[in-house]
Length: 142
Image (cartoon, rainbow, N blue to C red):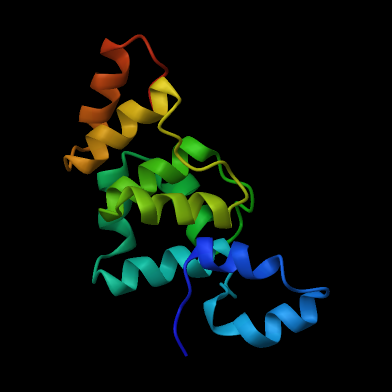
């Protein structure tokens, strides 16, 4: 069964009366993991270590390990963005992480988010992105 895009799923939702009907047809396209499981899977898929990701993310070890273990159930948006950068995720993948956490995705109409997006697209590190944010008088990520 094919994984459907978010746009496809949103369109299909208009045609269902109950979640049960929708789920039966679209179960393969739905995410059935919590945030910590999803983050751990991303690290494993990329053949990285959590320690390596945390170092690249410029995060405190305790906070980051709490995100990976599920102890930190409501991590801050900026911390998840840093973790995504540390894993080398794309903007699209980062937005998936943010959505799974119940947070707003990076939005190009917001100046700060557009600075983050441009720099992520160009493979910049957390430190480099923070410099770009600082230079534009925007709050840094950490």
